Length: 319
Image (cartoon, rainbow, N blue to C red; front, top):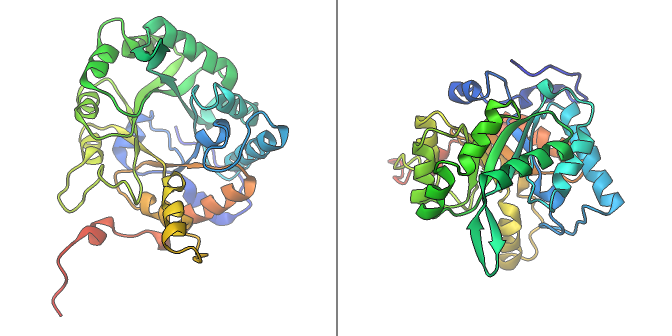
């Protein structure tokens, strides 16, 4: 079902509604989601990219206001995780979205796939993952979560096997889905390896959240037409891009090589990710209502879209 149209302060904001990719719409029960999503890492992790304390009232209030503004302006995709500030991000999302009907939102969260045991990390049990989902529901103040993702960066083949085995994490989430606590299942990853291929090929996931931005382009190479974004499209898996503006890495590099540069590259970085035809949602961390308005305006500036295919084309045209 399509999300409900709401009155917007800026008329152009209507364009913020999402992807027309049929695969993605089908994955999400034919509901439309906003092309930009509200990322939860900056809402919960202390000092992530910039100084921030999720337990400081002033900082927390700024994010809550940003969440409310995002909803008002048409953003309905909200992505968080239990690991973002040990539940702080989920609690802030729960406060900011409180009272809004679930059918008007698409809330995504994540469960960690490992835990510390002595000096090593081990795979969590299905029971532990089930408890995490229930805790997330309480913090988010919801009866169900639209998308639960296995939260990870790099997955070894052994990790993947343990996650997918009978009685493992994937099965625990599938059971929660059968009970109506979860609508869709996904995973997050920051690497391009065999583990990623296994997840894409296993047929048990609806969504992949992956690192893709100007600096990290391996998932999508239009010159050779290879990469995990192509594979996700082939398997009908929705794609959410994380680290859209590079988590501050590009900006720090600019300061190193050109300290006097005052140009704001953020709009161009956002437009780069939005220009990728295989990306359904570009996640953006936003700690103020002003930042939300800026990002929505960027999203709606279709003149800023580029052809990534042309950008990668390496043969100069004849003079």
